[in-house]
Image 1 (spheres, rainbow, N blue to C red):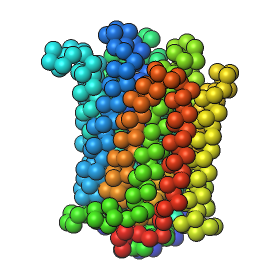
Image 2 (image 1 turned 30 degrees about the vertical axis):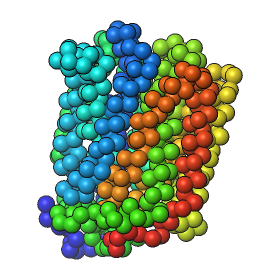
Image 3 (image 1 turned 90 degrees about the vertical axis):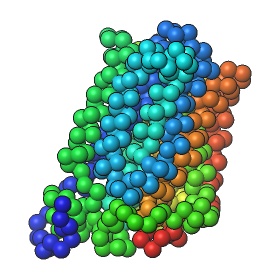
Length: 441
């Protein structure tokens, strides 16, 4: 498409394509969480059918995270180099086909060679590789489409999608499984992915300047607060400044903090439904209903956290404001995790744990905004680096949680998650988002 930068100014009201793009991001995140949470919901059926132990199921659930974490940096680099639109179309198709193939894992040749458990684990590992460019790609979309003053709020659309996806998944997957079996759930999720990939292909562009539906008034709003007038094009030449990233105290603290953010949040993505049924005594139907509460809290608190981050940055300065937003989210989350794990009443416990998830994502929106603050041009690459560590924490989470819960009980497992959350907040003592790594930031 042609560059619209030199359009004549228009007196008309700004168009709203930027919000359509954010809605597309949110819808795609909902899809990704359908595809990554479906196995945790189907896990009880699969455990019962194939006699898979709790510890082995922990390894299967974490296989996705290993592939996802290891592919974050290449995924972010691809999104920066070729633009998020192309990369997302390809990767959505990749992981959607493999999601449908999860239903066939017990019949694949992999079962003969490695056994049923490893067959599931290998398919999930490949799905993780496919989903890896998604979050870095969304970060690049936010960087391009929401300018310099709404980075926190823009980043929260990803977290809001996590909340909506997590709220929908237990109800939808449980309903499908009860009526048509657990395999049908994976076929449905795979089919939805092809629809979403088509939407990215037909509607999205990497830059607002290239979208025919964007008028000059909306372009002016998008560029507000940005150092460069034009949105950076995908970097066909040049590599991300890895040396500066890896030697930056702010980046090192960011990735450590995100590792500690990922560890507790992936308890909800992997074990929460099983925790409700096995530890708190809910029925499958009740577990499906109560399993939505952390994600409803995320859907509500994530955009509030993103908006608060932008507000605090404006009122207190970017350095102090971003810190305050993360501290409020993570310290509240840590306290609520501890209280929920120790609560005697099961309903009280679930409500406290749900609020803990919401406040975790209240703070997480600022982590993504910091990637754009520190390097606008290579925001996807930096987000990929950060997500690598966040998802390594997520990969360890179901494994460590299974061992701690088996040997010391679920209360001890949730206490550990509380302490790790506290460390995530403390990491921001060392982060300064006012010192960009590149001139484009």
